[in-house]
View 1 (cartoon, rainbow, N blue to C red):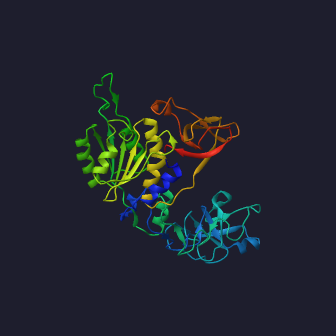
View 2: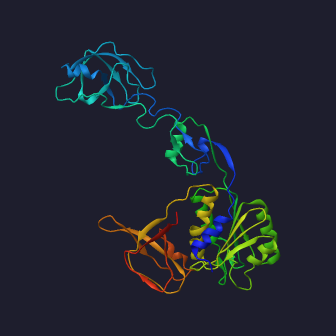
View 3: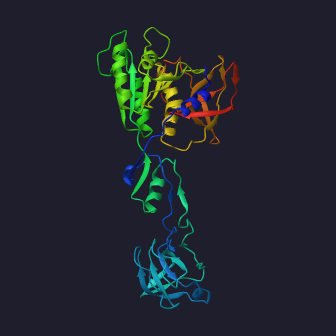
Length: 400
């Protein structure tokens, strides 16, 4: 069997990079940038007033002057005024251009203004360029601001807007199909018999995908019937970029998914990974290039494999720059017996010094999904047999 790292590599070798589309800036939140963004102008593009107050020539203050005639008002967005004399000052607003002839701003709270004259005491500090955001002090024109491969959140959207970009090039959203298999699955709200179970995995997968910004998600439920599987999977392979199946990939008599996918021309890249839970994980690629993930049907296995393999693969296909693994120390010892990589659900808790710890939250087997309530994700522990003590630092994968 492959190790998880080897499974990662195999998936990465067979992923197709999604196409690029140009979208209005308002539609790009959560997308992955596929072009570089450069500074349109110096930032700030002018010497910018950083506080409400008066702008003046600091040399007059150095010569002992503490009273200035208010010449005019400089509002944000207006062309710059020019100081008429160093005995005058200009009333300025935050964000305005610093008037010509001025080199500092005295805050309004340090002033007394009477009959058009602004006065401040000898204790008030006045120095060149105080309370002025100098032109180009943040960024110079042409500087690379955001690199291709960056996930776009509010700061990056603001930067693109500041660079004058009404549209930007981002990765197209993939067409995803979430498919659960099994005769025993009954929809929430429908009558359920004693020998049946609720269809919950698909809801968890769809929720996780949408929570991570994937919106083009279809949902289907297929019975354990070879002909129905063949018909429905053929349709999804023709109309979607990625299929995420839950169930039907183990070794049972009715685990028909691998066989049917092979009949449809899907090339199996691997089946089974040396891990617990989620050992029966299946991955293949269709002639069209569509990727197919066959997740084990036990709910804990489904969610672990989704977070460990599917979501990172989807981000990679978008062209997103890989994020460094998050690492955290165990808050209590964990014993791993089998020679398999072990995924342990955890809650992240802080001690009295504010230090975060991964507190183990073991489930009662891979079917005990109710134990995942309140957990933050899971840690990846090396194969056993071994006991990993409190303080052992390892990789953390979050549910969201």
